[in-house]
Length: 454
Image 1: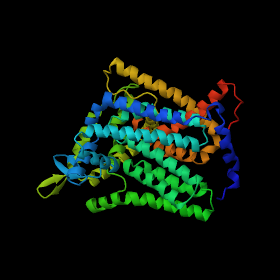
Image 2: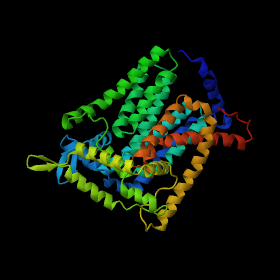
Image 3: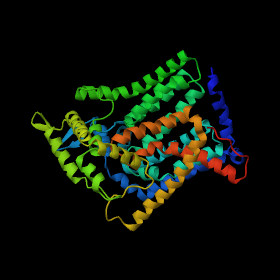
């Protein structure tokens, strides 16, 4: 294996980071088993308490899964008829459809989410070790993920946050292993979860492109070999995404790689009603989106097309119209657009869940504040950890974590967002917090002062 001499100081510093907490460096294996037990216990307990929410279908994923199971078609009910669609990404409902063979789909969905949660926790633990954290610090990062409020809340929702968080961490883990031991097989293993992640949430597409751009300069092999491995990685991701694009080309006449949902989410984030709310609404108040939705429903009806005796929605036309309207609003009010971008980034990284109703019960408000306290502490320690990591953010696996944060923040600066959409980033925050917490623990124990990696 060829190693770039310029990376030698960075690679050597891994040992420094591993020695942050020497007292816990020899963590026994039973601690890992205990972590698995705790994760299963917490997620299963939440499932038993709140699993009834899995009967709801806020994003029509259950309906899509049912049609895939019953009719072998990707379609759902919209504006008076059942229609083929590319409005939602396909992977999550496709997986759900396999459980429609069972008599109790709701419980099966919950167990799926518990399993995905465990995958996320174990992947973060392994990433922590590859990132140079001690075994104790890696377990701390995994524990933060196991108890994370966003992931716990989304584990009882029929939404794709739980799956996207698992795929994000598996992809980072496979990329880290690829850099440690470059090879064709590991390039394929790294490309597969990236392709699946794109099919789960389109926001992973720009991240995968950033990863492909960075790989040739990070792989510790000859430049020619690095480009070959990067090509294999990219082709593997493309091969996994291709059937979805080909299906859309056949059904809609365009090879849609993502979804027809982008225009709506851009317009939802950039429309006169929302801008007015930002301009004059009280801080923390709830935006009344009824007028926006009424106007958009009128646009959807205007975009319907005849199909024999039935009028069906034209998703491509509606998506294009939504983009057109959003860009018109942005050009009309550029200052509000910039301000709204800042608001959306703030909401993505917010510590307190946004208030959902003006007459919020006291118990719910206290719950939101408790979540805010959790993230306030985690963010503070993660900021310290990010500073300690220093220049090593340029190298694997920290680089893939950094690019993940950059890609998601950039996309959600323009499109509609809230706290739950940072679910794939939870593991990154936990890893940084574990690095910071290790340094704090070492100092509390009066260990030898740690020299910054910066």
